[in-house]
Image (cartoon, rainbow, N blue to C red; front, side, top):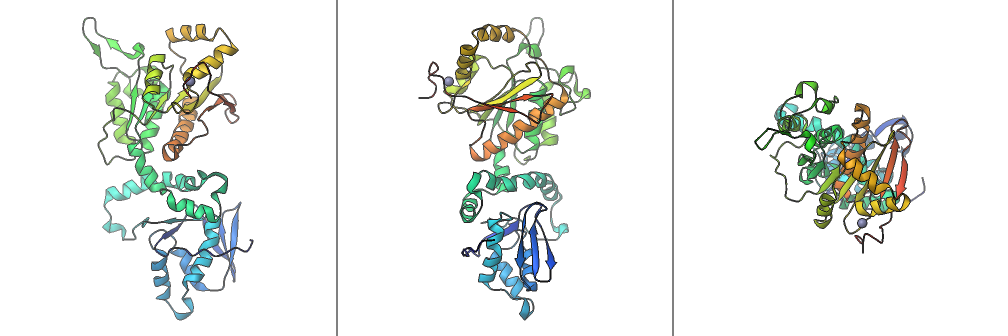
Length: 395
Ligand SMILES: [Zn+2]
């Protein structure tokens, strides 16, 4: 490793290993830290270093760790400089996280409430992934000293997941993809998620009364969220049951705001809807219908900043003047439903992308899309769009 200056680290910060990082004494004077594919060797004879590594779990600040280690035998003490020397390479390699807040409380299990233990168990898989995302969002310069300061200004993965409860998502559509997205968003902590549609196909009208509530139909069953036993039941009641059962952030009773933070269109959105999203400045994500064996995810539209749904239509009509006639014809028919595996794949990708967009406001899908051949799903093809001069949405 190249020699580098030791940065003084604020001793009030709470260091912790990122999920999955291992360490072990490889030789008498060497501790290996990292993974199978990358890691670093710390050269030290001191048993105090072993002790410090054990304490990097976010429950103690650097000052408290120094205190604890100093409390041991004389040969186990360690100075503030030595701890900085130890933590610097770990930070450079992005193996530890520094938080301004205590990340976990060490207490005996009996003293914790059951609901707290349950909540932590549900949160852990999200943290396993998103503890790494904090840095990935910083792109290439996410490693090294700059990363250290960058990370300190960013929210912890835990806070980001808690914040999802405030990020209201409107899902346009009530097909299999929409209901699966709803389930996954709930399970990821986006508990302000709502489904809407304008499709009359799902409305059952009585002969002379107003529209009755929607019922779950057989084609919505795909093993993800909606089950066969739900068929014929009130759609909204089933959705609310899913939300209670799968919800990660269940502490608040969610109310849905007048203007959502994000919209996902899983079915052809009529132009007056899109016009409204544009004028209200709500970012939205377009997902195409199934065409042959392909589906297109994206782009995410940031109104006024990136090419919109109308820009795309104009580009497509330029390439093929028949596009508008096709659109008109398609709008009269229900779109083709997807098989369960395709629903799971697309819904998973969309929720992962949306989680990053919610946390950072950034996404590679802004102005871009990926076209996926569902028969060869591991090789999506990207496409990029420019605003169309005939649309005038981006000045
Ligand atoms: Zn436009």
